[in-house]
Image (cartoon, rainbow, N blue to C red; front, side):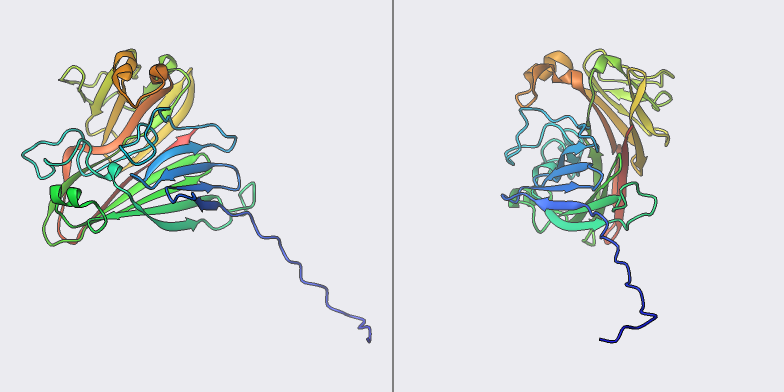
Length: 318
């Protein structure tokens, strides 16, 4: 072989950047996604319920009852259940009147539609993809016959869950695939995991009036930060667009940013009610959770035939 004096140098081949890993459980009941940096999210296909969201170092951000039913026999107690198309017990005179409390989305099996990863960023500390989006679908074609009988509208839902560094985004697109208008409500029933409810303060709702569902009364804005010391079930109406911040022991723990979701529900069952709930555990688990739920629940969204609507939230773990 003749040696060439000016032989071209080899083209360097860069190693492939780490990519998010997505897997489906052997029993086809859940989807798990993990970022190269270590963040992970786990989603049950039953209800498309997020049952775990962990930060890079393994810290769990969501409360899940240790008595929660994860076999599809009933809605999951904890995580982030999806409430649609009605919040709370339905009014029997409304179009949702035959449905169970909080509707059917959290009690239906969804389809996993696939994943989308972000492009690698030169600013990423790990050099890999910085986020992954999981899409799930539900429509009138795949709900149960009983549900279709109780709510006969034609619809399509696409639920997108995006896992990023220290962030979790949930977004629901609602489509009316018929020619007739219908109404709906939506809520992300988020159970946030905390260390001690007695040390928690909520910021961002001080100027918002609310409905106290425990006392069955309307309450004007107090102008004060929110603390919990007893059973709490409040619907903050038409909340300001600023983020809602969960502060624990003087340090910011979570921040919730809402898009098209005008209301915020704050819920904690406290001692006696927690003991009376068969799927809530441990009995003192109320000390380690607070529900801060972004939704559109004090009014109805009217969706005309052929139209679509989308709302969502971004939760930042601080």
